[in-house]
Image 1 (cartoon, rainbow, N blue to C red):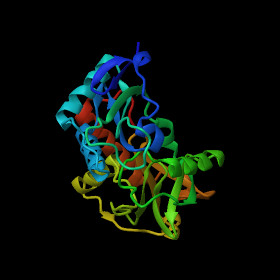
Image 2: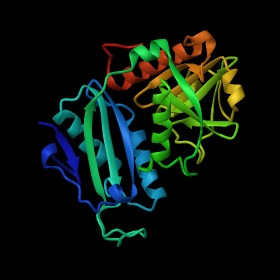
Image 3: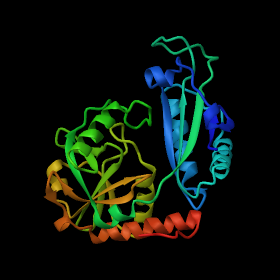
Image 4: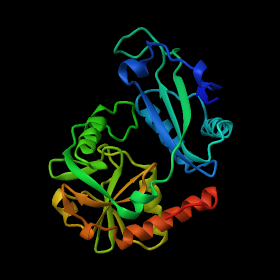
Length: 288
């Protein structure tokens, strides 16, 4: 029996249902988060839930739970499903109301849903690296909000999959923004560079963790824009996300990066990131 959360209650998944007029279903009017679980413990839960609240505020939606309450509720879900290694997915829509583009009445209650899923660490890809392709960024101009409106991301990811690639690296003109479901970083002469955390990218939690790791370990780190050409001539290219962790990109549009193998800075960051996971969640049975 799988347990899920529906509006603050832990219930059997087969008993969970969403009304057809839920605004998340009809408009994508809502927000979401994905939190990694290692050894039965949520990793960087506070950071994810703080972003969840910011996303809600940015679209005029109120989260009626405190970060502490959400943390306790999600941890109950993890334990109820005996999840050791995987993810917690959560989303909140503006609620159920007759279909109308304008916001519903203020008393409309948001719909909160969460579930767990087993998911291994992508160790093989982290060791060998992945392929990516370039694609024009066609998304809206508030990518900093982790909203349910992901059609642009889905189209980019699908094209990448059809091309035999792991990720689509998006760009606006010549400026690289981020992946379809990841942040993109490059390494040049030992310095780690990534797009500024503005409205054109999602400020990823793994990205932020990596920034702090660089600061703590005297690895030069800078937020700045870089071009497609600068990325293609970088020493190393890295993609980061909750599920992919610190992933080497070893080929872009058929052109090798660092002779097609993960670079030394990437490998060091992987080890430091794994150490941070173990600091928060305990020793990992498998680690890069």
